[in-house]
Image (cartoon, rainbow, N blue to C red):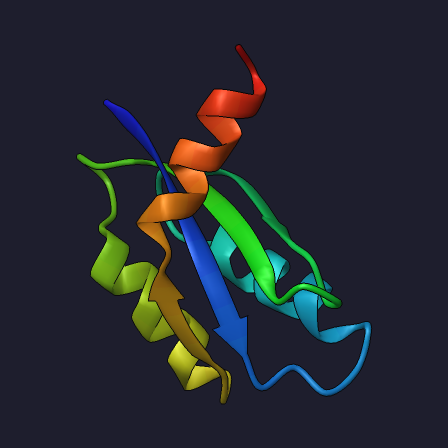
Length: 83
């Protein structure tokens, strides 16, 4: 079962940082898509909950020296935009 979580990633100091985070997260089992925007510090991760967890994703980001948290309201905003 896939889930998409929306994140705020803080501490990125250059435009290459999001790509490094994306590549690292994509190495986790079950992660199918990751996009993080440097300017807004927002992004999303789509993953299979049976193969990885939100906690594993957050821990991977923290090990890289960044802080991340779930921004649940973002999913509501995006859902409303798609209507």
